[in-house]
Length: 214
Ligand SMILES: C[S@@+](CC[C@H](N)C(=O)[O-])C[C@H]1O[C@@H](n2cnc3c(N)ncnc32)[C@H](O)[C@@H]1O
Image 1 (cartoon, rainbow, N blue to C red):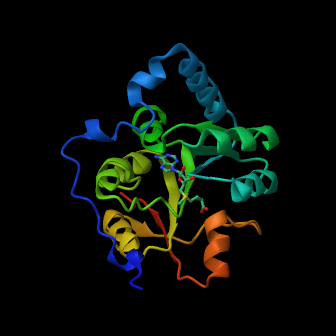
Image 2 (cartoon, rainbow, N blue to C red; image 1 turned 90 degrees about the horizontal axis):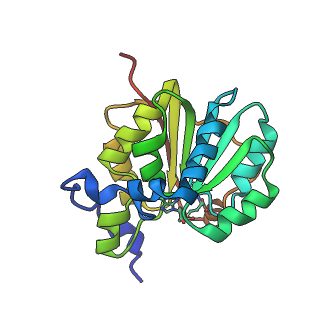
């Protein structure tokens, strides 16, 4: 049976940024009173002391929780669109971990202060097999990568892993103007998809990049 992962193709570039304002409502969402409180909680969290790391799409959050416990002087922000996952992790989260139900594209486009983040992990971003969804929802695009770059401190890195080979080629193109970097440290805990790939012996592609020195 042909493996659909081998025939994945990147969507055409977005005509404007309006289409990538976020699956959960974008800027309008952050103006609602309840979300305003969430934004203030996020702002207070990242304004605290210590380096900030972000994991996008943490799902069960095994790895993110392990990192927050292992490196307590860092502040770990988890962005995930699935409410149940966010609620589950929030129950276990130590004070240096904030799981937030928000579209990462919107957070980085509109809320993340420039130069604040030390490390961004994107593990197995959803490839979106449906063409329409892929065009609307793909996490890593030229615009979103530019937003990630703006959020980084000098020397800060973005780490991406995927088991979809052509998606990794797309990611390599997006980071072509960046500089390859060492993978950031990780503990023993594996994400759900990392475990599946290890169990099924699927190939995994990983890359880490930092902005080029000026
Ligand atoms: C294929 S799963 C991988 C989950 C996990 N990182 C792993 O390695 O097992 C992708 C995850 O990203 C989340 N996600 C998709 N788009 C997102 C977005 N724009 N912002 C935040 N999370 C997103 C999904 O809900 C899902 O949990």
